[in-house]
Length: 371
Image (cartoon, rainbow, N blue to C red):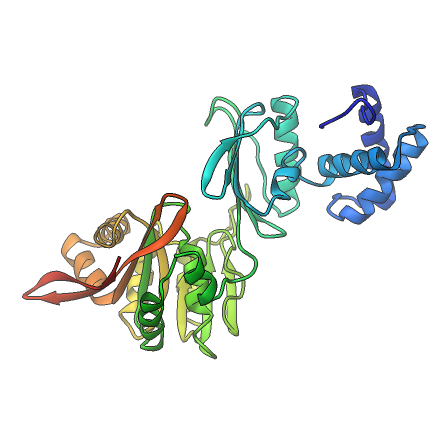
Protein backbone atom coordinates (compact mmCIF):
# COMPACT_ATOMS: atom_id res chain seq x y z
CA UNK A 1 0.00 0.00 0.00
CA UNK A 2 1.34 3.43 -0.92
CA UNK A 3 1.78 5.68 2.12
CA UNK A 4 2.89 9.15 3.09
CA UNK A 5 4.11 10.51 6.40
CA UNK A 6 0.54 11.56 7.15
CA UNK A 7 -1.33 8.41 6.20
CA UNK A 8 1.18 5.73 7.15
CA UNK A 9 -0.20 2.54 8.72
CA UNK A 10 2.34 0.18 10.17
CA UNK A 11 1.93 -3.50 9.29
CA UNK A 12 0.42 -4.41 12.65
CA UNK A 13 -2.25 -1.70 12.40
CA UNK A 14 -3.01 -2.55 8.78
CA UNK A 15 -3.45 -6.23 9.70
CA UNK A 16 -5.74 -5.25 12.58
CA UNK A 17 -7.92 -3.10 10.29
CA UNK A 18 -8.15 -5.81 7.66
CA UNK A 19 -8.98 -8.41 10.31
CA UNK A 20 -11.83 -6.24 11.59
CA UNK A 21 -13.24 -5.88 8.08
CA UNK A 22 -12.98 -9.61 7.41
CA UNK A 23 -14.90 -10.32 10.62
CA UNK A 24 -17.49 -7.60 9.94
CA UNK A 25 -20.74 -9.33 8.86
CA UNK A 26 -21.90 -6.19 7.09
CA UNK A 27 -18.87 -6.27 4.76
CA UNK A 28 -20.27 -9.30 2.93
CA UNK A 29 -18.97 -12.84 2.80
CA UNK A 30 -16.99 -12.53 -0.47
CA UNK A 31 -16.12 -8.80 -0.13
CA UNK A 32 -17.17 -8.04 -3.70
CA UNK A 33 -19.44 -5.14 -2.72
CA UNK A 34 -17.01 -2.23 -2.61
CA UNK A 35 -19.55 0.09 -0.99
CA UNK A 36 -20.10 -2.33 1.90
CA UNK A 37 -16.35 -2.90 2.27
CA UNK A 38 -15.70 0.86 2.22
CA UNK A 39 -18.10 1.36 5.10
CA UNK A 40 -16.56 -1.53 7.00
CA UNK A 41 -13.07 -0.10 6.49
CA UNK A 42 -14.18 3.27 7.87
CA UNK A 43 -15.65 1.57 10.93
CA UNK A 44 -12.45 -0.45 11.42
CA UNK A 45 -10.18 2.59 11.15
CA UNK A 46 -12.31 4.44 13.68
CA UNK A 47 -12.33 1.45 16.02
CA UNK A 48 -8.53 1.29 15.86
CA UNK A 49 -8.32 4.97 16.78
CA UNK A 50 -6.80 6.19 13.50
CA UNK A 51 -6.90 9.99 13.34
CA UNK A 52 -5.69 11.74 10.19
CA UNK A 53 -6.80 14.58 7.93
CA UNK A 54 -9.89 14.06 5.71
CA UNK A 55 -7.69 13.76 2.60
CA UNK A 56 -5.42 11.18 4.25
CA UNK A 57 -8.47 9.30 5.55
CA UNK A 58 -9.88 9.08 2.02
CA UNK A 59 -6.55 7.72 0.73
CA UNK A 60 -6.38 5.14 3.52
CA UNK A 61 -9.93 3.96 2.88
CA UNK A 62 -9.37 3.75 -0.87
CA UNK A 63 -6.13 1.77 -0.53
CA UNK A 64 -7.59 -0.62 2.03
CA UNK A 65 -10.68 -1.20 -0.09
CA UNK A 66 -8.40 -1.91 -3.05
CA UNK A 67 -6.52 -4.44 -0.92
CA UNK A 68 -9.59 -6.17 0.50
CA UNK A 69 -12.06 -6.00 -2.38
CA UNK A 70 -9.91 -5.29 -5.43
CA UNK A 71 -6.59 -5.95 -7.08
CA UNK A 72 -4.55 -4.21 -4.42
CA UNK A 73 -1.91 -1.79 -5.72
CA UNK A 74 -2.94 -2.53 -9.32
CA UNK A 75 -6.28 -0.77 -8.89
CA UNK A 76 -4.60 2.62 -9.17
CA UNK A 77 -3.10 1.63 -12.52
CA UNK A 78 -6.48 0.52 -13.85
CA UNK A 79 -7.99 3.87 -12.90
CA UNK A 80 -5.94 5.40 -15.71
CA UNK A 81 -8.10 5.10 -18.87
CA UNK A 82 -4.95 5.17 -21.02
CA UNK A 83 -3.76 1.86 -19.53
CA UNK A 84 -4.92 -1.13 -21.58
CA UNK A 85 -2.73 -3.87 -20.07
CA UNK A 86 -1.02 -4.55 -16.74
CA UNK A 87 1.75 -7.15 -16.67
CA UNK A 88 3.14 -8.36 -13.32
CA UNK A 89 6.29 -10.44 -13.69
CA UNK A 90 6.41 -11.27 -10.02
CA UNK A 91 5.55 -9.02 -7.06
CA UNK A 92 8.24 -6.41 -7.67
CA UNK A 93 8.10 -5.96 -11.46
CA UNK A 94 4.91 -4.38 -12.80
CA UNK A 95 4.55 -3.00 -16.33
CA UNK A 96 1.67 -1.24 -18.09
CA UNK A 97 0.75 -0.70 -21.71
CA UNK A 98 -0.13 2.98 -21.89
CA UNK A 99 -0.97 4.58 -25.25
CA UNK A 100 0.44 1.51 -26.98
CA UNK A 101 3.83 1.61 -25.22
CA UNK A 102 5.06 -0.65 -22.40
CA UNK A 103 6.31 1.22 -19.33
CA UNK A 104 7.68 -0.14 -16.07
CA UNK A 105 5.99 1.27 -12.96
CA UNK A 106 7.08 1.66 -9.35
CA UNK A 107 4.06 -0.32 -8.12
CA UNK A 108 4.86 -3.48 -6.16
CA UNK A 109 3.27 -6.12 -3.95
CA UNK A 110 4.81 -6.82 -0.55
CA UNK A 111 5.84 -10.35 -1.56
CA UNK A 112 4.77 -13.43 -3.52
CA UNK A 113 2.20 -14.39 -0.88
CA UNK A 114 0.48 -10.99 -1.03
CA UNK A 115 0.30 -11.13 -4.82
CA UNK A 116 -1.09 -14.69 -4.85
CA UNK A 117 -3.64 -13.81 -2.17
CA UNK A 118 -4.99 -10.96 -4.31
CA UNK A 119 -5.21 -13.21 -7.38
CA UNK A 120 -6.93 -16.06 -5.53
CA UNK A 121 -9.48 -13.79 -3.92
CA UNK A 122 -10.21 -12.11 -7.23
CA UNK A 123 -10.72 -15.29 -9.25
CA UNK A 124 -12.75 -16.89 -6.46
CA UNK A 125 -15.30 -14.13 -6.99
CA UNK A 126 -15.86 -15.36 -10.56
CA UNK A 127 -15.90 -19.07 -9.69
CA UNK A 128 -12.32 -19.82 -10.71
CA UNK A 129 -9.52 -21.38 -8.69
CA UNK A 130 -5.74 -21.08 -8.60
CA UNK A 131 -3.64 -23.63 -6.71
CA UNK A 132 -1.04 -26.32 -7.30
CA UNK A 133 -3.60 -28.53 -9.01
CA UNK A 134 -4.70 -25.60 -11.21
CA UNK A 135 -1.60 -23.39 -11.56
CA UNK A 136 -3.03 -21.31 -14.44
CA UNK A 137 -6.30 -19.40 -14.59
CA UNK A 138 -8.09 -17.29 -17.20
CA UNK A 139 -11.08 -15.22 -16.10
CA UNK A 140 -13.28 -12.28 -17.06
CA UNK A 141 -13.73 -9.82 -14.17
CA UNK A 142 -16.63 -7.42 -13.62
CA UNK A 143 -15.97 -4.08 -15.24
CA UNK A 144 -14.43 -5.45 -18.41
CA UNK A 145 -11.02 -6.73 -17.34
CA UNK A 146 -9.60 -10.05 -18.52
CA UNK A 147 -7.23 -11.79 -16.10
CA UNK A 148 -4.65 -14.46 -16.68
CA UNK A 149 -2.40 -15.74 -13.90
CA UNK A 150 0.14 -18.52 -13.42
CA UNK A 151 1.87 -19.92 -10.34
CA UNK A 152 5.10 -21.87 -9.77
CA UNK A 153 6.20 -24.41 -10.88
CA UNK A 154 4.78 -23.29 -14.24
CA UNK A 155 6.64 -19.98 -13.77
CA UNK A 156 9.55 -19.02 -11.46
CA UNK A 157 7.40 -16.46 -9.62
CA UNK A 158 3.69 -15.56 -9.74
CA UNK A 159 2.73 -13.92 -13.04
CA UNK A 160 -0.40 -11.86 -13.57
CA UNK A 161 -1.65 -10.24 -16.77
CA UNK A 162 -4.67 -7.95 -16.95
CA UNK A 163 -6.21 -6.70 -20.17
CA UNK A 164 -8.89 -4.07 -20.23
CA UNK A 165 -11.74 -5.04 -22.56
CA UNK A 166 -13.79 -2.19 -23.98
CA UNK A 167 -17.24 -2.21 -22.37
CA UNK A 168 -18.61 0.09 -25.08
CA UNK A 169 -18.22 -0.92 -28.72
CA UNK A 170 -16.43 1.90 -30.58
CA UNK A 171 -18.29 3.45 -33.49
CA UNK A 172 -17.00 3.36 -37.04
CA UNK A 173 -16.20 7.06 -36.62
CA UNK A 174 -14.11 6.21 -33.53
CA UNK A 175 -12.18 3.55 -35.45
CA UNK A 176 -11.66 5.91 -38.37
CA UNK A 177 -10.45 8.70 -36.08
CA UNK A 178 -7.80 6.44 -34.55
CA UNK A 179 -6.71 5.18 -37.97
CA UNK A 180 -7.81 1.62 -37.24
CA UNK A 181 -10.40 1.40 -40.03
CA UNK A 182 -10.27 4.01 -42.84
CA UNK A 183 -13.54 4.90 -44.58
CA UNK A 184 -12.98 2.75 -47.72
CA UNK A 185 -12.20 -0.27 -45.52
CA UNK A 186 -15.29 0.42 -43.41
CA UNK A 187 -17.51 0.42 -46.50
CA UNK A 188 -16.07 -2.91 -47.63
CA UNK A 189 -16.46 -4.52 -44.20
CA UNK A 190 -20.08 -3.42 -43.99
CA UNK A 191 -20.68 -4.99 -47.41
CA UNK A 192 -19.02 -8.21 -46.26
CA UNK A 193 -21.29 -8.44 -43.19
CA UNK A 194 -24.43 -7.58 -45.14
CA UNK A 195 -23.58 -10.28 -47.71
CA UNK A 196 -23.34 -12.83 -44.86
CA UNK A 197 -19.80 -13.84 -45.70
CA UNK A 198 -17.92 -16.01 -43.21
CA UNK A 199 -15.21 -13.80 -41.71
CA UNK A 200 -11.96 -14.51 -39.88
CA UNK A 201 -10.22 -11.58 -38.14
CA UNK A 202 -6.52 -12.39 -37.89
CA UNK A 203 -3.62 -10.72 -36.10
CA UNK A 204 -1.17 -10.86 -33.24
CA UNK A 205 -2.22 -10.51 -29.62
CA UNK A 206 -3.36 -7.03 -28.65
CA UNK A 207 -4.03 -5.63 -32.13
CA UNK A 208 -7.77 -5.12 -31.59
CA UNK A 209 -9.29 -8.26 -33.12
CA UNK A 210 -12.05 -8.57 -30.53
CA UNK A 211 -12.86 -4.86 -30.76
CA UNK A 212 -13.26 -5.07 -34.54
CA UNK A 213 -15.32 -8.25 -34.22
CA UNK A 214 -17.69 -6.49 -31.82
CA UNK A 215 -18.01 -3.57 -34.25
CA UNK A 216 -18.84 -5.92 -37.14
CA UNK A 217 -21.46 -7.73 -35.05
CA UNK A 218 -23.17 -4.49 -34.10
CA UNK A 219 -24.20 -4.10 -37.75
CA UNK A 220 -26.08 -7.40 -38.16
CA UNK A 221 -29.46 -5.85 -37.28
CA UNK A 222 -31.94 -8.47 -35.97
CA UNK A 223 -30.05 -11.65 -36.87
CA UNK A 224 -29.95 -14.15 -34.00
CA UNK A 225 -26.29 -14.31 -33.01
CA UNK A 226 -24.92 -17.06 -30.76
CA UNK A 227 -21.60 -15.98 -29.26
CA UNK A 228 -19.22 -18.67 -27.96
CA UNK A 229 -16.17 -17.74 -25.92
CA UNK A 230 -13.53 -19.30 -23.74
CA UNK A 231 -13.51 -16.20 -21.53
CA UNK A 232 -16.44 -13.76 -21.98
CA UNK A 233 -15.36 -10.54 -23.65
CA UNK A 234 -17.88 -9.71 -26.35
CA UNK A 235 -20.94 -9.72 -24.10
CA UNK A 236 -24.05 -9.02 -26.19
CA UNK A 237 -22.61 -7.37 -29.30
CA UNK A 238 -25.82 -7.52 -31.35
CA UNK A 239 -29.46 -6.69 -30.67
CA UNK A 240 -30.47 -10.36 -30.69
CA UNK A 241 -27.56 -12.21 -29.13
CA UNK A 242 -27.06 -15.19 -26.83
CA UNK A 243 -23.67 -15.56 -25.13
CA UNK A 244 -22.22 -18.90 -24.01
CA UNK A 245 -18.94 -19.47 -22.18
CA UNK A 246 -16.67 -22.42 -21.47
CA UNK A 247 -17.04 -24.07 -18.06
CA UNK A 248 -13.88 -25.56 -16.60
CA UNK A 249 -14.01 -29.15 -15.37
CA UNK A 250 -14.04 -29.68 -11.61
CA UNK A 251 -12.27 -32.46 -9.68
CA UNK A 252 -15.58 -34.33 -9.90
CA UNK A 253 -15.56 -34.09 -13.69
CA UNK A 254 -17.98 -32.23 -15.92
CA UNK A 255 -17.08 -29.04 -17.69
CA UNK A 256 -18.11 -27.65 -21.08
CA UNK A 257 -15.48 -27.12 -23.77
CA UNK A 258 -15.56 -24.71 -26.69
CA UNK A 259 -16.05 -27.67 -29.01
CA UNK A 260 -19.09 -28.67 -26.90
CA UNK A 261 -20.47 -25.15 -27.19
CA UNK A 262 -20.14 -25.15 -30.99
CA UNK A 263 -22.13 -28.37 -31.20
CA UNK A 264 -24.78 -27.13 -28.74
CA UNK A 265 -25.14 -23.80 -30.51
CA UNK A 266 -26.27 -25.49 -33.72
CA UNK A 267 -29.47 -26.51 -31.89
CA UNK A 268 -30.23 -22.92 -30.87
CA UNK A 269 -31.47 -21.67 -34.25
CA UNK A 270 -28.54 -19.31 -34.89
CA UNK A 271 -28.52 -16.97 -37.88
CA UNK A 272 -24.85 -16.36 -37.19
CA UNK A 273 -22.29 -18.21 -35.08
CA UNK A 274 -19.47 -16.27 -33.47
CA UNK A 275 -16.46 -17.88 -31.79
CA UNK A 276 -14.52 -15.22 -29.93
CA UNK A 277 -11.21 -16.97 -30.65
CA UNK A 278 -10.66 -20.31 -32.32
CA UNK A 279 -7.51 -22.08 -31.17
CA UNK A 280 -8.12 -25.81 -30.91
CA UNK A 281 -10.08 -28.85 -31.98
CA UNK A 282 -13.34 -26.88 -31.91
CA UNK A 283 -12.35 -25.64 -35.37
CA UNK A 284 -13.57 -28.93 -36.89
CA UNK A 285 -17.14 -28.37 -35.69
CA UNK A 286 -16.93 -24.70 -36.63
CA UNK A 287 -15.82 -25.46 -40.20
CA UNK A 288 -18.65 -27.97 -40.55
CA UNK A 289 -21.13 -25.35 -39.39
CA UNK A 290 -19.76 -22.80 -41.85
CA UNK A 291 -20.05 -25.36 -44.64
CA UNK A 292 -23.60 -26.42 -43.83
CA UNK A 293 -25.58 -23.22 -44.19
CA UNK A 294 -24.53 -21.09 -41.20
CA UNK A 295 -23.49 -18.12 -43.30
CA UNK A 296 -22.27 -14.97 -41.62
CA UNK A 297 -20.19 -16.87 -39.06
CA UNK A 298 -17.28 -14.91 -37.58
CA UNK A 299 -14.23 -15.68 -35.46
CA UNK A 300 -10.72 -14.48 -34.66
CA UNK A 301 -7.41 -16.30 -34.83
CA UNK A 302 -3.86 -15.47 -33.78
CA UNK A 303 -1.78 -15.22 -36.96
CA UNK A 304 0.62 -12.75 -38.54
CA UNK A 305 -1.07 -12.55 -41.96
CA UNK A 306 -4.31 -13.70 -43.64
CA UNK A 307 -2.40 -16.52 -45.36
CA UNK A 308 -0.97 -17.62 -42.02
CA UNK A 309 -4.47 -17.58 -40.53
CA UNK A 310 -5.70 -20.14 -43.05
CA UNK A 311 -2.69 -22.35 -42.37
CA UNK A 312 -3.38 -22.14 -38.62
CA UNK A 313 -6.99 -23.20 -39.18
CA UNK A 314 -5.74 -26.18 -41.18
CA UNK A 315 -3.33 -27.09 -38.41
CA UNK A 316 -6.07 -26.99 -35.78
CA UNK A 317 -8.27 -29.16 -37.98
CA UNK A 318 -5.41 -31.68 -38.23
CA UNK A 319 -5.26 -31.81 -34.44
CA UNK A 320 -8.97 -32.63 -34.48
CA UNK A 321 -8.24 -35.65 -36.69
CA UNK A 322 -9.25 -34.17 -40.06
CA UNK A 323 -6.92 -35.35 -42.88
CA UNK A 324 -4.81 -32.62 -44.49
CA UNK A 325 -6.55 -32.58 -47.88
CA UNK A 326 -9.96 -32.50 -46.22
CA UNK A 327 -8.84 -29.79 -43.76
CA UNK A 328 -7.57 -27.60 -46.57
CA UNK A 329 -10.73 -28.10 -48.64
CA UNK A 330 -12.97 -27.35 -45.65
CA UNK A 331 -11.09 -24.17 -44.78
CA UNK A 332 -11.25 -22.93 -48.37
CA UNK A 333 -14.95 -23.71 -48.62
CA UNK A 334 -15.82 -22.24 -45.22
CA UNK A 335 -13.85 -18.98 -45.06
CA UNK A 336 -14.91 -16.20 -47.41
CA UNK A 337 -12.94 -13.23 -46.06
CA UNK A 338 -9.92 -12.75 -43.81
CA UNK A 339 -9.31 -9.37 -42.20
CA UNK A 340 -5.64 -8.89 -41.32
CA UNK A 341 -4.76 -6.61 -38.40
CA UNK A 342 -1.46 -5.44 -36.94
CA UNK A 343 0.21 -2.66 -34.98
CA UNK A 344 2.09 0.21 -36.51
CA UNK A 345 3.85 2.06 -33.73
CA UNK A 346 1.17 2.71 -31.14
CA UNK A 347 -1.70 2.35 -33.58
CA UNK A 348 -3.77 -0.77 -34.05
CA UNK A 349 -5.01 -1.00 -37.60
CA UNK A 350 -6.59 -3.15 -40.29
CA UNK A 351 -3.83 -3.89 -42.80
CA UNK A 352 -5.75 -5.84 -45.44
CA UNK A 353 -9.03 -7.47 -46.36
CA UNK A 354 -8.56 -10.67 -48.38
CA UNK A 355 -11.13 -12.80 -50.22
CA UNK A 356 -10.54 -16.57 -50.21
CA UNK A 357 -11.36 -18.44 -53.43
CA UNK A 358 -10.23 -21.57 -55.28
CA UNK A 359 -9.12 -21.88 -58.88
CA UNK A 360 -7.91 -25.07 -60.53
CA UNK A 361 -7.99 -26.77 -57.12
CA UNK A 362 -5.60 -24.18 -55.74
CA UNK A 363 -6.20 -21.61 -53.02
CA UNK A 364 -6.33 -18.07 -54.32
CA UNK A 365 -6.22 -15.02 -52.05
CA UNK A 366 -7.64 -11.91 -53.66
CA UNK A 367 -6.78 -8.64 -51.93
CA UNK A 368 -9.93 -6.54 -51.77
CA UNK A 369 -8.35 -3.71 -49.76
CA UNK A 370 -4.94 -2.94 -48.26
CA UNK A 371 -2.94 -0.05 -46.95
